[in-house]
Length: 127
Image (cartoon, rainbow, N blue to C red; front, top):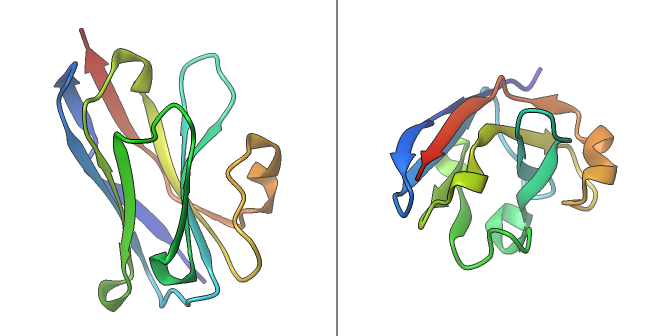
């Protein structure tokens, strides 16, 4: 059974950076889709970034393009999210998610297709 554990959250000022990590308990395959979602208080869970084909195909939400970078290290079964130039609106609980095989989806409409979720890590950005 695949388990995901996030780490790296914290509190930063506007313009700061954080790097989130998501370690998988078992091997991640090239055909798997890995993703970062986030959920702010009172808001729906939204997709932030996806990584497919071992990291060769990535997608980002418009709100984070140019600031966030998703990457994965298959040798250690770990997914990363480098977040730069953070803004207060980035404040949320960040979750990593995975689905075995098939395409990646970043739209919140497809949250339900992800079979595996981490426990979440809090990111707080103050102005």
